[in-house]
Length: 87
Image 1 (spheres, rainbow, N blue to C red):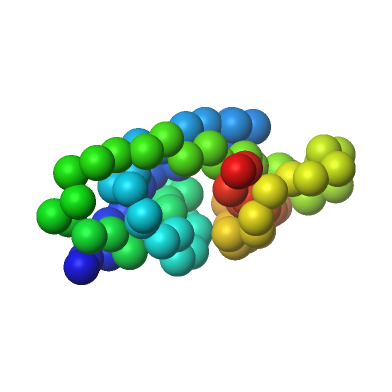
Image 2 (cartoon, helix red, strand yellow; image 1 turned 90 degrees about the vertical axis):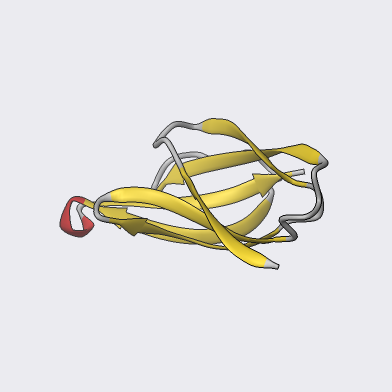
């Protein structure tokens, strides 16, 4: 097992190819770039698409935004985003 990092774009929705059964741990910024960390079994060569949604504070969310992963801030806290995995 290892923890891998995936950089995120600050867009409404995106898809990431993660090893099958990867466990998403957290999302934070690293040097100003939002990143997602996941616990993966690097021996598992099967990949799966995982849909990630990002919502800014105060913006509308759908009735079922998905499973909450975490929150990150940018520009010294002027922008705050909340990240969900959409199943």
